[in-house]
Image (cartoon, rainbow, N blue to C red; front, side, top):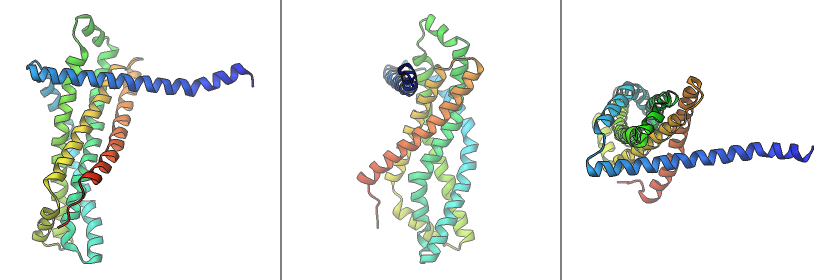
Length: 273
Protein backbone atom coordinates (compact mmCIF):
# COMPACT_ATOMS: atom_id res chain seq x y z
CA UNK A 1 0.00 0.00 0.00
CA UNK A 2 1.36 3.38 -0.99
CA UNK A 3 1.88 6.32 1.34
CA UNK A 4 -1.00 8.21 -0.28
CA UNK A 5 -3.35 5.27 0.35
CA UNK A 6 -2.35 5.10 4.00
CA UNK A 7 -2.97 8.83 4.35
CA UNK A 8 -6.44 8.54 2.85
CA UNK A 9 -7.27 5.54 5.07
CA UNK A 10 -6.18 7.39 8.18
CA UNK A 11 -7.97 10.61 7.27
CA UNK A 12 -11.41 9.00 7.52
CA UNK A 13 -11.55 8.26 11.28
CA UNK A 14 -9.56 11.38 12.13
CA UNK A 15 -11.92 13.57 10.12
CA UNK A 16 -14.93 11.93 11.76
CA UNK A 17 -13.56 12.49 15.26
CA UNK A 18 -12.65 16.11 14.53
CA UNK A 19 -16.09 16.71 13.06
CA UNK A 20 -17.75 15.23 16.15
CA UNK A 21 -15.64 17.42 18.43
CA UNK A 22 -16.54 20.53 16.43
CA UNK A 23 -20.23 19.60 16.54
CA UNK A 24 -20.07 19.10 20.30
CA UNK A 25 -18.34 22.45 20.64
CA UNK A 26 -21.09 24.18 18.65
CA UNK A 27 -23.69 22.49 20.87
CA UNK A 28 -21.98 23.73 24.02
CA UNK A 29 -21.64 27.24 22.59
CA UNK A 30 -25.31 27.39 21.57
CA UNK A 31 -26.50 25.99 24.91
CA UNK A 32 -24.34 28.36 26.95
CA UNK A 33 -25.35 31.40 24.94
CA UNK A 34 -29.06 30.55 24.93
CA UNK A 35 -29.04 29.83 28.66
CA UNK A 36 -27.31 33.14 29.38
CA UNK A 37 -29.85 34.96 27.22
CA UNK A 38 -32.76 33.24 28.96
CA UNK A 39 -31.46 34.11 32.44
CA UNK A 40 -30.72 37.72 31.48
CA UNK A 41 -34.14 38.23 29.90
CA UNK A 42 -35.98 36.61 32.81
CA UNK A 43 -34.18 38.95 35.21
CA UNK A 44 -34.88 42.02 33.09
CA UNK A 45 -38.48 41.03 32.34
CA UNK A 46 -37.95 40.78 28.57
CA UNK A 47 -38.26 37.01 28.26
CA UNK A 48 -40.70 35.88 25.49
CA UNK A 49 -43.08 34.24 27.92
CA UNK A 50 -45.82 33.74 25.35
CA UNK A 51 -43.60 31.66 23.09
CA UNK A 52 -42.42 29.59 26.05
CA UNK A 53 -46.01 28.96 27.20
CA UNK A 54 -47.07 27.94 23.69
CA UNK A 55 -44.17 25.51 23.44
CA UNK A 56 -44.77 24.17 26.95
CA UNK A 57 -48.43 23.52 26.24
CA UNK A 58 -47.48 21.76 23.02
CA UNK A 59 -45.00 19.53 24.86
CA UNK A 60 -47.68 18.67 27.42
CA UNK A 61 -50.23 17.88 24.72
CA UNK A 62 -47.91 15.43 22.93
CA UNK A 63 -46.55 13.82 26.12
CA UNK A 64 -49.51 13.62 28.51
CA UNK A 65 -51.20 10.46 27.29
CA UNK A 66 -47.93 8.64 26.51
CA UNK A 67 -46.84 9.41 30.09
CA UNK A 68 -50.01 7.86 31.48
CA UNK A 69 -49.85 4.85 29.17
CA UNK A 70 -46.19 4.14 29.90
CA UNK A 71 -46.41 4.59 33.67
CA UNK A 72 -49.31 2.19 34.30
CA UNK A 73 -47.59 -0.95 32.92
CA UNK A 74 -44.37 0.09 34.65
CA UNK A 75 -46.17 0.18 37.98
CA UNK A 76 -47.77 -3.19 37.30
CA UNK A 77 -44.44 -4.80 36.39
CA UNK A 78 -42.78 -3.38 39.50
CA UNK A 79 -45.61 -4.65 41.71
CA UNK A 80 -45.47 -8.15 40.20
CA UNK A 81 -41.69 -8.46 40.45
CA UNK A 82 -41.38 -6.97 43.92
CA UNK A 83 -44.44 -8.83 45.20
CA UNK A 84 -43.01 -12.16 44.08
CA UNK A 85 -39.69 -11.53 45.83
CA UNK A 86 -41.32 -10.06 48.94
CA UNK A 87 -43.69 -13.00 49.34
CA UNK A 88 -40.79 -15.46 49.13
CA UNK A 89 -38.97 -13.77 52.02
CA UNK A 90 -42.12 -12.99 53.99
CA UNK A 91 -41.92 -9.23 53.62
CA UNK A 92 -45.14 -8.34 51.81
CA UNK A 93 -45.53 -5.21 53.92
CA UNK A 94 -42.33 -3.75 52.38
CA UNK A 95 -43.69 -3.80 48.84
CA UNK A 96 -44.69 -0.15 49.04
CA UNK A 97 -41.27 0.96 50.22
CA UNK A 98 -39.28 -0.85 47.53
CA UNK A 99 -41.71 -0.01 44.75
CA UNK A 100 -42.00 3.64 45.71
CA UNK A 101 -38.25 4.18 45.99
CA UNK A 102 -37.62 2.43 42.67
CA UNK A 103 -40.21 4.57 40.89
CA UNK A 104 -39.08 7.87 42.38
CA UNK A 105 -35.34 7.40 42.00
CA UNK A 106 -35.05 5.60 38.66
CA UNK A 107 -38.26 4.76 36.81
CA UNK A 108 -39.85 8.21 36.74
CA UNK A 109 -36.72 10.13 35.58
CA UNK A 110 -35.90 7.60 32.88
CA UNK A 111 -39.51 7.45 31.69
CA UNK A 112 -39.50 11.24 31.54
CA UNK A 113 -36.30 11.15 29.48
CA UNK A 114 -37.92 8.74 27.01
CA UNK A 115 -41.04 10.91 26.78
CA UNK A 116 -39.34 14.27 26.30
CA UNK A 117 -36.71 12.73 24.05
CA UNK A 118 -39.18 10.90 21.83
CA UNK A 119 -42.10 13.35 21.71
CA UNK A 120 -40.73 16.75 22.68
CA UNK A 121 -37.27 16.38 21.18
CA UNK A 122 -38.55 15.18 17.82
CA UNK A 123 -41.07 18.05 17.71
CA UNK A 124 -38.37 20.65 18.40
CA UNK A 125 -35.95 19.20 15.85
CA UNK A 126 -38.59 18.92 13.13
CA UNK A 127 -39.86 22.47 13.73
CA UNK A 128 -36.46 24.15 13.73
CA UNK A 129 -35.18 21.87 10.96
CA UNK A 130 -38.08 22.85 8.70
CA UNK A 131 -37.44 26.52 9.47
CA UNK A 132 -33.76 26.07 8.66
CA UNK A 133 -34.19 24.45 5.26
CA UNK A 134 -36.80 27.10 4.33
CA UNK A 135 -34.18 29.76 5.15
CA UNK A 136 -36.38 31.22 7.89
CA UNK A 137 -33.47 31.16 10.35
CA UNK A 138 -31.29 33.13 7.93
CA UNK A 139 -34.18 35.55 7.39
CA UNK A 140 -34.39 36.14 11.15
CA UNK A 141 -30.68 36.89 11.29
CA UNK A 142 -31.02 39.25 8.33
CA UNK A 143 -33.72 41.17 10.19
CA UNK A 144 -31.51 41.42 13.26
CA UNK A 145 -33.42 38.81 15.30
CA UNK A 146 -31.29 36.32 17.20
CA UNK A 147 -32.64 32.74 16.72
CA UNK A 148 -31.10 31.72 20.04
CA UNK A 149 -33.10 34.44 21.76
CA UNK A 150 -36.33 34.03 19.82
CA UNK A 151 -36.49 30.26 19.33
CA UNK A 152 -33.96 28.32 21.42
CA UNK A 153 -34.23 30.00 24.83
CA UNK A 154 -38.05 29.66 25.13
CA UNK A 155 -37.85 25.98 24.25
CA UNK A 156 -35.11 25.31 26.78
CA UNK A 157 -37.16 26.95 29.53
CA UNK A 158 -40.41 25.26 28.48
CA UNK A 159 -38.90 21.78 28.37
CA UNK A 160 -37.13 22.30 31.71
CA UNK A 161 -40.51 23.11 33.30
CA UNK A 162 -42.60 20.43 31.56
CA UNK A 163 -40.18 17.55 32.27
CA UNK A 164 -40.50 17.60 36.10
CA UNK A 165 -44.28 17.92 35.78
CA UNK A 166 -44.31 14.78 33.65
CA UNK A 167 -42.11 12.99 36.17
CA UNK A 168 -44.63 13.77 38.93
CA UNK A 169 -47.41 12.34 36.75
CA UNK A 170 -45.36 9.20 36.10
CA UNK A 171 -44.75 8.78 39.84
CA UNK A 172 -48.43 9.17 40.65
CA UNK A 173 -49.72 6.76 38.01
CA UNK A 174 -46.99 4.15 38.62
CA UNK A 175 -47.49 4.08 42.38
CA UNK A 176 -51.28 3.93 42.07
CA UNK A 177 -51.12 1.06 39.59
CA UNK A 178 -48.53 -0.73 41.74
CA UNK A 179 -50.74 -0.26 44.79
CA UNK A 180 -53.78 -1.61 42.96
CA UNK A 181 -51.92 -4.77 41.93
CA UNK A 182 -50.39 -5.27 45.39
CA UNK A 183 -53.65 -4.70 47.27
CA UNK A 184 -56.08 -6.47 44.94
CA UNK A 185 -53.93 -9.19 43.41
CA UNK A 186 -51.27 -10.01 46.00
CA UNK A 187 -53.13 -9.61 49.28
CA UNK A 188 -50.99 -6.78 50.65
CA UNK A 189 -52.82 -4.74 53.28
CA UNK A 190 -53.40 -1.18 51.98
CA UNK A 191 -52.34 0.34 55.29
CA UNK A 192 -49.02 -1.52 55.41
CA UNK A 193 -48.31 -0.61 51.79
CA UNK A 194 -48.67 3.12 52.39
CA UNK A 195 -46.97 2.93 55.79
CA UNK A 196 -43.85 1.34 54.34
CA UNK A 197 -43.91 3.77 51.43
CA UNK A 198 -44.08 6.75 53.76
CA UNK A 199 -41.38 5.35 56.03
CA UNK A 200 -38.73 4.96 53.34
CA UNK A 201 -39.63 7.44 50.60
CA UNK A 202 -38.73 11.02 51.50
CA UNK A 203 -38.84 14.52 50.10
CA UNK A 204 -35.18 14.09 49.18
CA UNK A 205 -36.09 11.28 46.77
CA UNK A 206 -38.72 13.48 45.15
CA UNK A 207 -36.30 16.38 44.83
CA UNK A 208 -33.70 14.11 43.25
CA UNK A 209 -36.31 12.90 40.77
CA UNK A 210 -37.36 16.45 39.90
CA UNK A 211 -33.74 17.55 39.58
CA UNK A 212 -32.98 14.70 37.19
CA UNK A 213 -36.08 15.54 35.15
CA UNK A 214 -35.03 19.19 34.83
CA UNK A 215 -31.57 18.16 33.65
CA UNK A 216 -32.99 15.64 31.17
CA UNK A 217 -35.48 18.13 29.76
CA UNK A 218 -32.80 20.78 29.36
CA UNK A 219 -30.36 18.38 27.68
CA UNK A 220 -32.98 16.98 25.30
CA UNK A 221 -34.15 20.46 24.31
CA UNK A 222 -30.57 21.67 23.75
CA UNK A 223 -29.67 18.70 21.54
CA UNK A 224 -32.92 18.95 19.58
CA UNK A 225 -32.50 22.70 18.99
CA UNK A 226 -28.92 22.22 17.85
CA UNK A 227 -29.77 19.42 15.44
CA UNK A 228 -32.71 21.38 14.07
CA UNK A 229 -30.68 24.54 13.47
CA UNK A 230 -27.97 22.53 11.67
CA UNK A 231 -30.36 20.62 9.40
CA UNK A 232 -29.43 20.69 5.72
CA UNK A 233 -30.21 18.77 2.57
CA UNK A 234 -33.94 19.34 2.24
CA UNK A 235 -36.66 17.16 3.78
CA UNK A 236 -34.23 14.24 4.17
CA UNK A 237 -32.01 16.49 6.25
CA UNK A 238 -34.94 17.32 8.54
CA UNK A 239 -35.68 13.62 9.00
CA UNK A 240 -32.02 12.93 9.77
CA UNK A 241 -31.93 15.75 12.32
CA UNK A 242 -35.05 14.38 14.04
CA UNK A 243 -33.57 10.87 14.23
CA UNK A 244 -30.27 12.20 15.56
CA UNK A 245 -32.03 14.41 18.13
CA UNK A 246 -34.08 11.51 19.52
CA UNK A 247 -31.21 9.03 19.67
CA UNK A 248 -28.61 11.44 21.04
CA UNK A 249 -31.05 12.97 23.53
CA UNK A 250 -32.09 9.66 25.05
CA UNK A 251 -28.52 8.33 25.04
CA UNK A 252 -27.25 11.47 26.76
CA UNK A 253 -29.98 11.17 29.41
CA UNK A 254 -29.04 7.56 30.14
CA UNK A 255 -25.37 8.45 30.57
CA UNK A 256 -26.20 11.47 32.74
CA UNK A 257 -28.57 9.36 34.84
CA UNK A 258 -25.75 6.91 35.54
CA UNK A 259 -23.49 9.74 36.72
CA UNK A 260 -26.21 11.37 38.81
CA UNK A 261 -27.14 8.03 40.39
CA UNK A 262 -23.54 7.46 41.45
CA UNK A 263 -23.34 10.94 42.94
CA UNK A 264 -26.64 10.44 44.72
CA UNK A 265 -25.52 7.15 46.25
CA UNK A 266 -22.31 8.81 47.46
CA UNK A 267 -23.80 11.91 49.05
CA UNK A 268 -27.44 10.94 49.76
CA UNK A 269 -27.46 7.41 51.18
CA UNK A 270 -30.67 5.40 51.46
CA UNK A 271 -32.54 6.05 54.68
CA UNK A 272 -33.32 3.02 56.82
CA UNK A 273 -35.80 3.19 59.66
